Image (cartoon, rainbow, N blue to C red; front, side, top):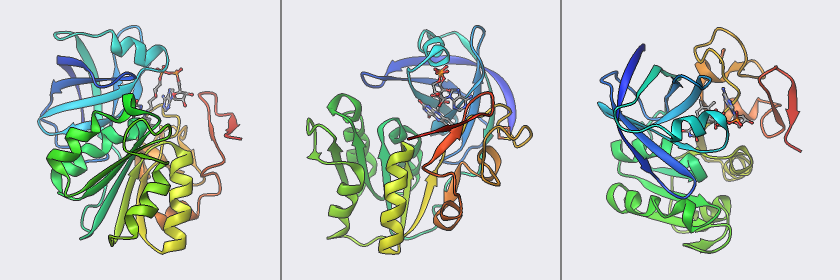
Length: 255
Ligand SMILES: Cc1cc2nc3c(=O)[nH]c(=O)nc-3n(C[C@H](O)[C@H](O)[C@H](O)COP(=O)(O)OP(=O)(O)OC[C@H]3O[C@@H](n4cnc5c(N)ncnc54)[C@H](O)[C@@H]3O)c2cc1C
Ligand code: FES
């Protein structure tokens, strides 16, 4: 874990909604870990690594002032990164199904590069998910795509797709990253079907390294104890799927 000022090698439009920034940084990193990223004119924000090789990358959806600032960067500009933080995924299970929803597809790509397993890629529409198809073809044993509007792959949501896949395939572990509503219903299914899972959770982060308490979900610091948690851990989190704290620490309900 360290802090560095890195020079951007490239900025690519990943899909209609998101961009990928690549930079060389030899710091060792595991799939599922994240970095705190800062540049002048923005607040520091947490972003997962979408590549954990010596050439690292971050892939982000442009949704507000800080991601807009990052989206305006070009090759040769500099960023300050610190990390990598968090635990990352445990990839020791034999039969793994990876599930990525929306921008959550990017952080699970390093899992697929390390272990040739099956994957479900889910998104709102073709514009959001099409970039996952070549990733699936290159790194997965099998991959399935689904969209909420039916514009690419199966016309269903991620959990419905997982249920369809599980009719013909057996897995010991589901590894998932995506919106909390997707994770909530996927956890429910994993409990019903008695399948182990690991899910990457997001909470508002300030320090990123376990000091400030901004990212608490029940008694867990998401930045340091997670962001990847097991089925048993998430089952014990009464706040999971209900709401999250904002920058001021106020609890904001999802409903
Ligand atoms: C561990 C972790 C990994 C993440 N990885 C990715 C990723 O790979 N790609 C990606 O697109 N997004 C990722 N995010 C979310 C990303 O941090 C926010 O989208 C980003 O901070 C938004 O900032 P903004 O100023 O553009 O938008 P804003 O308008 O400021 O915020 C929009 C929403 O983003 C979230 N957010 C804002 N600031 C923070 C913060 N400091 N910590 C956590 N959430 C925040 C809040 O839910 C907020 O409502 C990750 C978050 C966490 C906690
Ligand atoms: S962000 Fe400070 S403890 Fe997690």
